[in-house]
Amino acid sequence: MHGENFTRWSFSFLEGFSRYPRLEIVLFVFSLVMYVITLLGNSSLISITLLDSRLQTPMYVFLGNLSFMDICYTSASIPTLLVNLLSSRKTIIFSGCAVQMYLALAMGSTECVLLAVMAYDRYVAICNPLRYSIIMNRQVCLQMATVSWVTGCLTALLETTFALQTPLCGNLIDHFTCEILAVLKLACTSSLLVDVIMLVVSILLLPIPMLLICISYVFILSTILRISSAEGRHKAFSTCGAHLTVVILYYGAALSMYLKPSSSNSQEIDKIITLLYGVLTPMLNPIIYSLRNKE
Image (tube, rainbow, N blue to C red):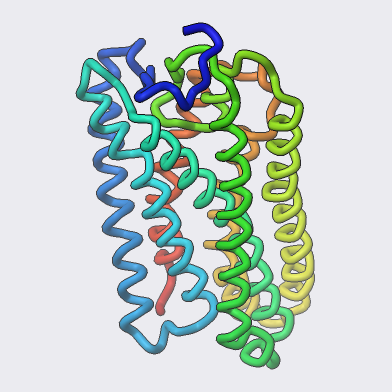
């Protein structure tokens, strides 16, 4: 079996949390509850924004896209996790592994770009309120959302293609999902091309959007501080508070996963981070955006 290509395996084993059998039932209940809340919360938010004409604004168009991504992201991995937590034979077929890897990368990458787009939307709304409807018209919103999707899906396709072509020495994935870093740890030899692709994509989709978000919020903060009334400042802060909270949660987990030295954390810590990144954040997004939101 040594040195065989991953594509020759008809299925793979997902080790997941099998080292902690007593913990599996707790994780099953935790993941199931989180998954149900995620589906209900995000699908409700999408339905409301589609049915209520008053919510046909750029902010809610982007928020609807974000909710759809969260549903796709969690649905790509959590059902498999739930089944495997109750099963003694934790397996996944090759095509399922490929789809799971691609969807996770595509949704995660798209969300990185979309959060930067949403920061720009908040910048225009607060710094140029009189021109907001002109700058952020429907056509511009659709174009920005499309760019986010295309960027995320294409970079995910690139990463997944090269990852699945890498010769792997075994089919025991030390993770509960076909996470790309966990799969690449099975590589027989390190591939400079794959490493470069992973690094370039990570830089394009993590630090660069994060920098754009920070620049947007520097201008937003400077504008808010110039507002004379306390009520006006409070309203402006509340407008950005939900987005900023989501950004900190999302990028904090993503940066700790993809831009850390490979030896800085154990694989078990990576699993916990992925679980929080893939279940907790999507569940909290609709709750965060609904709090103190009169609309």
